[in-house]
Image (cartoon, rainbow, N blue to C red):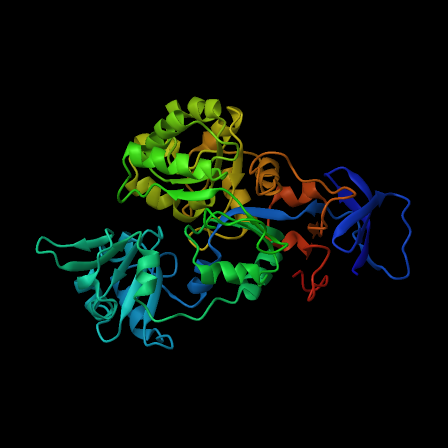
Length: 471
């Protein structure tokens, strides 16, 4: 059984005291604790000891696939020539395919099979758009996947009915047409998360397959996991570290459902005892969702994922309904210059709101949307506090929140994003992050370098040391 004594740790940004961990729980907190000979003693020297950070929206398997893919968008790739060079230099996978990620139209315009053929025609190539909503296949890949016989509504076709190579929201269907990929190494992903102080994540991938559920059930990821994509009939914990959350409902901007279809879907989810986690990235999707929820009523835990565009006039309605919002201000830092160029100026104030929602009483949970957004929570905290783009422009200054408020959001539990803050106190789980410095100092210039050590359930096998802040 793990036994640790954190000595002279700063708790809640104020008190300096000692914290004892026995097994997977915090057992004692107080200034007069003395070391037991069986304990590891960690001298904190006034460094902040926090409940570990929770990222409220990630895509774990996509993170693994991203690691094995060619970068096809900014900042690594700018312009058609750079994209062509990257694709031609790419080493195909064990099945002879090239997989690209992160594409955006500013690189080489609207890609389709023919345009992709001009960049790399000799092997099957598939590229995922930065949004995660679109795949583009070259002709060789389209033949291998047999798009011509496909019946998925997301297969884009020209006037003659011939597939263009573009597939919208068709990930699971496409996966059935591709060679079986090796599963991602979730342990490696866990080490990266731990370096940032992350002890848990909410996986927002919809409609998880049995194979992906099995990977979570095996406990391959050291972190705790809250699943939005578990089947509606899933019951009970899949693993001591895995919980089932609201049901992901995607309002795809490429094809919104009818109001009747959406209300029927929400009623069905609610009837199964689950809340909904509704993917909304456009004004139209948000308005449709609010109309549907006005008919169905709210179940505790209903939440909106992304809320990329929130018109001023909808904020009071979000508060009235009691909805939570899980959003990603990291996109302001990562893509803000694109928004300034491509999003109508009248909408700039509506992008990835934080302050106005919080001021209205709407709980706001921050997250990364990794791999599509920056994973580092300290980068997201800076983005939430300063709203600066890569070029240094400020986008939506009135939506900035303090770094302390942004960190606070990461310290809320998975079933209450943006709500109550988890505490370092006896009886709670030993899911902790120790910083090198006091909290106030860390928040002056938030950076992952402040993370000294991360504990999950008291320090699982392979736990890190001060020189290697893993887990």
